[in-house]
Image (cartoon, rainbow, N blue to C red; front, side, top):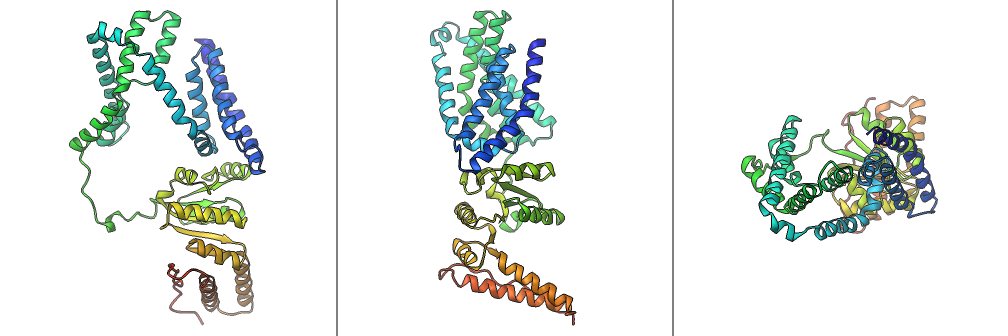
Length: 401
């Protein structure tokens, strides 16, 4: 027991020390166009290495792999890792269930059906009851607690790991272990039926509230989040202003150093490529209130804008533009607002000059807003006929003189 505890502690400590630097190196290499598959290789290395380390410490490889997954989930690279290993999930699950099916001895079940099926029902009900009680204790709503308990009630794959370890240590006899494994296998096969039962039973015990009118379902300001793509100097400033006004945001950046710096400052920033639809889905694009693209690479900005519009045609989308031509192109791609660097710099210079010359601030701001709307109309003239154009921003009705 002591060697196992020491081995477990070493895996956790080394994982916390090694994972972030390793994946930052992988991210830097990929940002330079090298090692596009290194994320997959690094993820597999971590999982297999943790499994072997756990096995050497007297634990199961499955437990080591689970710990590796938990450690990866704590890093800023977890979303990219999820996408990288997505193609393998279905294959590995298929291999696992094929192995479970092959291990099901129907003759042994037929020899003692009462014990096997009774044990399967008993362990499922016991586990479901414990999960339901824990969920309610933690304040989970009754409907969600019922669904969770019934879906997670059947035995899991760790039943085989624990029973296997018990047989190796002589704690459980082969006959008892075989019976429990058969019961666990049958219990796992009931997951689809339990999911259907959970849906019907939860609707009966805790029915869904009747549909509300659209006005009642309008999200409040604090419910949605703003997705900032690019967390460099501009993106960080946008995030700071959103935080000042109490607007929740999540940032995404493809530069590992930028992500590390942002997380060190306490920002909600993750590593990933926002031009990938899978990454946008991981970042809850479906519930985002707005997307702000702040990167200084025009071609990459175009890719992200196109990807966002393909997933969410209705979301507010503000993008940074290099110049007026780039702004015109972004409006054709469907942005809500394009902000050209050259134009905004010119307007800022004009504003400071007028204020320093003694022109009242109200008049200056009004003229700046009017000029900005003129530029916006000019850029939108490049949009195809029939596209929705943004109306001019409202100006103050009174101006200080």
